Length: 166
Length: 166
DNA sequence: AGCAGTATCTGCATGTATGCAGATAACCGT
DNA sequence: ACGGTTATCTGCATACATGCAGATACTGCT
Image 1: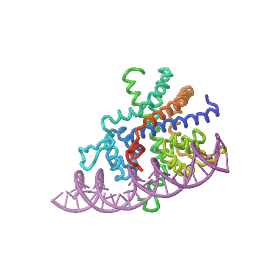
Image 2: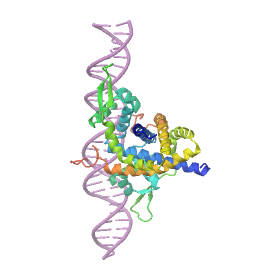
Image 3: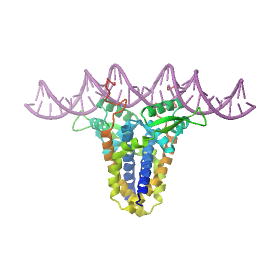
Image 4: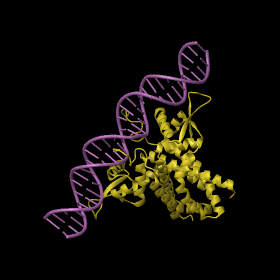
């Protein structure tokens, strides 16, 4: 289980796995009727429980103006809502609608059952190990995301164009 | 490791894990300078080694016209290229450029190292189990993706509008 | 050879996400 | 109370992905 060949194999296996999970996320987003920026933002606010518009702008890398529209869309789609910040009335706290998670779960449902089938083939001890991994890997992936986003090459249509761009 | 509370816990852990992986995929796509449809298409062609334009259209759910443009963008971005089908000269085979995978790996690099750190904390036997899971889970996620895409509610701006839509 | 069917590409129109800059409202220190 | 600062929103302009319909090139059958 540790020959050089296996290492290369692991490489491929892992890539394909990440790919499959990522693509499933894409499909989920689309099924939920959300574009990636919206999906990303929704993920952020559900994870944090709520973020101010400005925070959301920073985290998504969008301008505050674009973020306002993003929140509009999220609200219109029924996934999030604006709430007042009791300590600062300028601020807008964007929080997930109570059953936003439920609606997402519904979309992701098929995935869950397919994976559940796979998980069912393991012993309780093995499952425990897997969940231990999930627990530890999630923060690692989040850290990686931060890193990737920081290094992201601005794309066509993104910011940093020589001309006005918009 | 199997009380009802843990089940709920597992639910959350798994959701957050999937979320983290999915978001990392999004970040990778963006870092690669690709939109989600392009990322998805690229994934398909690398996985299959090559697809005809029509096949790609079917698999992505786009029209053939939109697919042509998609291929254009993928080509322009240097990830894919058009090749002639020797058996049918009408056909165009879209295949990944030789080092497309390498460029993607580069983008995903940070993720790999973060996760590698996590994996390093396990024993070889445990790692073997984890990779066994990756191997089995990937097809499950792909199946789930298919299912989700099939059930996908056409979104605003998508097809199935009462009027011309475009 | 001719014709119907098929695969891809192109022209045109549209919806939409986004950036930028200015407007508005609220906070905070003096 | 006032002025500077900060948070969000709105108006305008732009780029772009996509759909649809027609054009073009090729295949396979008769």
